[in-house]
Image 1 (cartoon, rainbow over the protein chains, first blue to last red):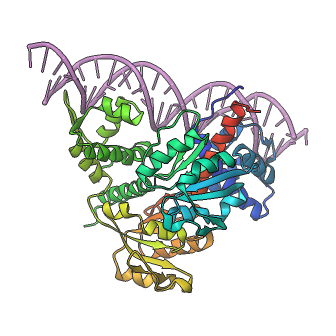
Image 2: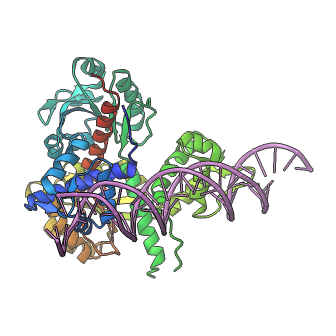
Image 3: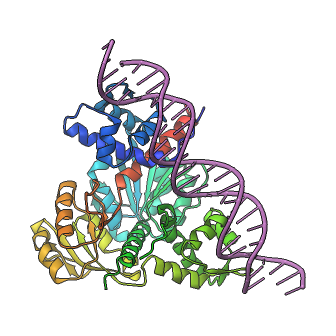
Length: 215
Length: 215
DNA sequence: TAGATTGTTAATCGATTAACAATC
DNA sequence: TAGATTGTTAATCGATTAACAATC
């Protein structure tokens, strides 16, 4: 299968295009030019055209882009036209918060299981799913079709569970634990390191303070 | 105040260095060379040295870097040596999850208030703080020193509250709402767009499937 | 047809990697 | 001193922006 390599930077921007196009649809905007869109998004028209042309020609000279069409096409590129069964490992605050994210379901991300180590939580329903014990995970994975595992466990538990997930054929992990998972090349890991995001904010705040010494 | 411009890419990497150095300290490692560290972190020694030298010379020829010293210095650069009072706007699942993140407190991020619109939540304690009504926010901001506001409200409410935050002098917003806030230049916004992260994962999964057509 | 705007090539800019002299 | 490894300059690579011919 041929693969024109598309840069990570481009891919990170796709969901944002998707979001803006969705909003345009809500506002009943039918067509938009790269120039208009670039102004809305605070980017350049050139970048938008370059980005999109990685995936094909979605526009029309003299017209621009049809909002609905482009939205649908980007959706397909992002894989939002198929259902993705997911499980959550870690039914703490964060796990439960993610379980209750209505938006995900809308985009084809379907929660099919939620697990924890804490026996106190066993059987408690979250979004219609009873929390199961992590010990049942390997069995569950064999019996059910699961695509994405969401890891909201503490560090050491997360490391251990990642191995079990890989052994049982999981190919995509959304990792919220504060460590870099060591997984085979064919396993896709997307990290959300919240504390690192907060530190970036803190850096920018400190820098700003230094530049505008306010004392 | 002079400002040697440091690229965003470098800054995004700092918290990761900080994390690895912290782990090295836990393992009682006293010194490390850029080469050793690069192997652990799956990056290049050159990049590590370049990154660090944006902020000063923290190493020593023939020796490498003192782990504890470098850890402390990066901590200072990230502003982790001072206390940052924070408030959470939105006491839903995500807001409560963030409130309970113990790690933040450890790094100087101190939660001083938590707010919501829902009257049902009023007075309920989260991590020792009683949930207050958002209507009390302007008063609270005038009476208390708050640095960072964490926005975990739904889209439209978030937009409205961002304006109130700005009006009351908040200079840093950690935004979890699914929109790009329009704020003045002197207000720092760090976005965490969870659904966009998940879409990136979905894209990579779909791409992988296409490349290894398994049917 | 004329005007608008894309798709795409070329130019520029920035970030990463390589190399090496300085120095502990 | 010799060996190791930094700090820093130079070379390469990749991503963004500009320009423009193609075309709706």
